[in-house]
Image 1: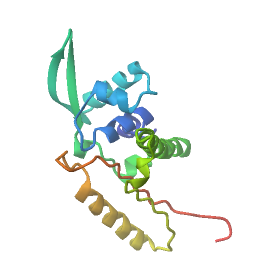
Image 2 (image 1 turned 135 degrees about the horizontal axis):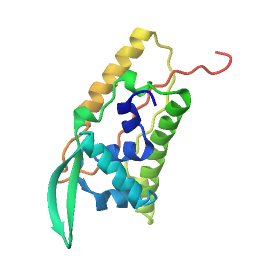
Image 3 (image 1 turned 90 degrees about the vertical axis):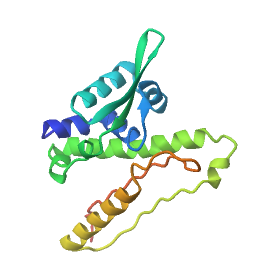
Image 4 (image 1 turned 60 degrees about the horizontal axis):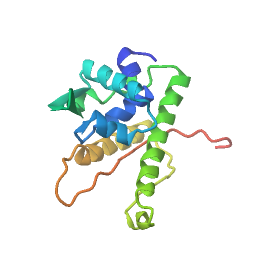
Length: 180
């Protein structure tokens, strides 16, 4: 991966930890429940690396039995990458990052559906949109800026009565389909 920061943030497990801690304070035990397929040692190593880099922070510690249980949250400004950082690696590394992003969407959706075995998941509000447009570079920059502003309006809202946690994912990808 191109830069040390990109290498840190674009690793699939660390990326999932940062996403999970966006807008939520969680313990390592909570994170393990969210990512049961990640070996415990790998998860703890990812948390440690992100904490050392200042991407996540400890918000509280509590003694549980003989161990200290820490609650973490993402540090918003430290968990967002620039365009240059995001594309600093090789094509293969970039595609692996996009795959991890897509896997996160599938994993979150699968957990939600599985938690509603009675079929009640169908009553939830899902919003998935795919569209195509022809944009100039300036228009694409405008779109990216407007999406970032909209995303910022809703991200990192705290848990309150009457709310449910939702995952927000946005991707703007140039398309060079054959024949166009």
